Length: 315
Image 1: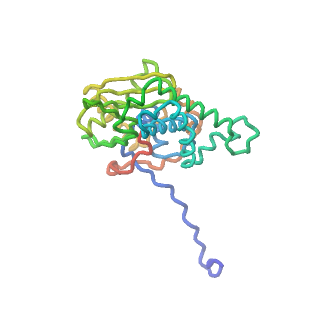
Image 2: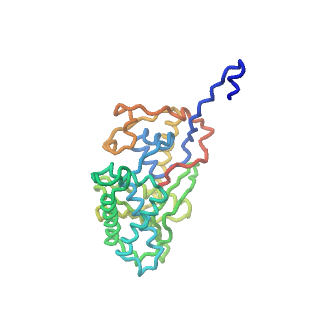
Image 3: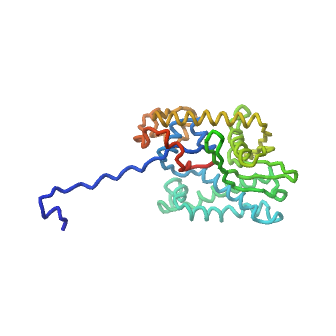
């Protein structure tokens, strides 16, 4: 029996569960930099609120393709064939699914048209079509690069550095190749299509971000930046200069100042664009009649700007 029923002491209600404390922004990655430039409110949802996002078929396919292309280099060069790479897709999918069982929802009968599958279970036909599409992207890569002639120095390399200003940068580089002469090439895989020429600068911003970090860490500038677009079968290359990377550094510092200003004033404004059609948090956006959740971090004290908690996404 509860003791409150046996005496005159008023029962005390248990305290409300406190909302998890949000961390102030403490570092910058290419993905989060792009988020803020595209929409400060999206940046807030992902970095400050840390709102969960449902997995998508496109993002999951990107993860799977990256994994296959990374692990293919575990095998000797003669084994790196189209057939072998395609055969890796199903096994890597099973491994990914075991680590993230929620991905099964992407291919459940209720999300497709196969009415014969049990509700909530994976619809085999949908999954088979998706895996076949993933295999096609892997095969496309062989028309753009020859893995039997490549021996990457690094794969899926996590990089972190701090600029002289104190700004922390972090990211994950898909591949680094080093020529016998010591020249470095940074390679990034994209499962989508190459942008039109007028948008190439936006695509290269991520690569220059990586180049700046490597330059800071190793003291030498990467010779070439290479984007491999599997969706369209294109390769975009760029040879950076010191002026390019200095300009990127200035841009990142200005961007960080804007992020800290938004954090200190709690002013995270939405920036409507065509990207809104694919935003996972559109229902919470005031531009579309939504209401953002209460800000868990109303004002950032400048004294805690150096909080060591990292960004949730290093890419």
